[in-house]
Image 1 (cartoon, rainbow, N blue to C red):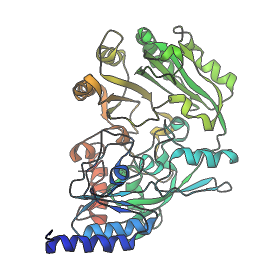
Image 2 (cartoon, one colour):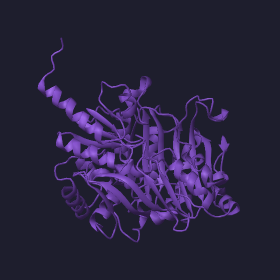
Image 3 (spheres, one colour):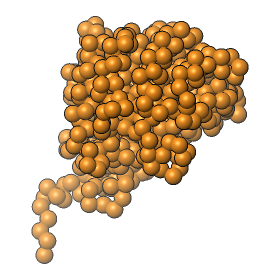
Image 4 (tube, helix red, strand yellow):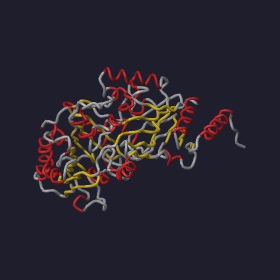
Amino acid sequence: MTVVSPEQDTVRLNLAELAAQVAGPVLTPADPGFAAEIMGFNVANVPSPDLAVGATDAEDVAAAVRWAAANGLTVTVQSTGHGSITSMAGGLLVNTRRMTDVVIDPVAGTATVGAGTRWSQVITAAAPHGLAPLNGSSSQVGVVGYSLGGGLGPLGRRYGFAADHIRSLQLVTAYGEIREVTAGNDPDLFWAIRGGKGNFGIVTALEFSLVPVARLYGGGIFFPVAAAPDVLTRWREWSTNLSEESSTSVALLQLPPDPALPEPLRGQRVVHLRFVHLGSADEGAAVLAPMRAVAAALLDGVSEIPYAAIDSVHMDPVVPMPSLERGVALRELPLEAIDAVLAQVGADVMTPLVVVEIRQLGGALARQPAVPNAVAGRDSAFTLFAVGVLAGPVADLVPDALQSLMDTAQPWSTGSLLNFQGPAAPAQVGALWNDADRARLLAVKNRLDPAGLFRPTQIIG
């Protein structure tokens, strides 16, 4: 006969109490479906919570938070799982992927979405109205986490960060309360959470402005990796003269031998120039002409496209994979910086890094919106971002290769953008802001979550 202790009986009763309060599943590691519930896009970051709650609405989230606080568990939220995540031992994971309502107001030019919504859903809903959101390089990423961390996308130089366009949000606090937050009813929190991400509670709904973009001139040009010195040098000079109607990045890629890729690219190391222009196709082609003349392209995929085809610009992976990423922001990009990067990942170097990207900032990204927010990195001119895949014989080499590349960039670094920083200790996260802004962020955090119930990916310390 199995002997059940009073403590075990109490746990079972408590779980039954929680399950009665939420409409979604309540799962322990012993339950079927638990592994699928906690799994995200980055399969290198598999959390290990004591409990997972599949929330269906804000009331489910609030009930889970109240239960966790009463039972001594910390709380982390996950939607698509594209970013890093803490191990969550001794914690409760709230999964918001079922919360996918999207409401477009074409008159006001806004979208209101649930916490589990992906950008692809917003793009599809907004397109018939000639509107577009400020999504990132992949439409498969979740709206909320991306936006609260700043949100740097292909239209950033023209329209700024996604966080700049947030109008209001619904938040579950550490006390299990559901609050509507705006610039009018809590200006400090509204400032902090737009850029400070998940340190203040769980956002269950978000309202934000859309932009009047139905089509654009954009895509990517792939050059052989041997052309990297010429491409990067010319790109550095060319990008400094771009208007805010253009956004661009350039990346060194190690592409897999995937039959889905065009034949010239399969299994190749390449230089991928990304470009978006909001003027006419003729105007965009004239702007891009100097880069097209640098070297013979393996593939030129830049043309006039509907905004719904925006994923074709960066061509980010859509299949989950185990990866590790790091990033820094740069105040400038001198030739010495390009040489230093190529010494680490150029054509003649064996590297375990599959993506090394330099992205131009500036334009609207450098300016505070009408209602200022806490987005860090506005004084930066470029970002350097790299990814390694934690699989196969090179997996163990990835962390050191990332660290070496970041160290190489330090002479020109201004810190990082929160969404691009990668795994970081609280002190490293806090260092992204100046002393006054960090103190303001921590004051809001201590007011909203004095006991440290929430354990977001990036904890501000």
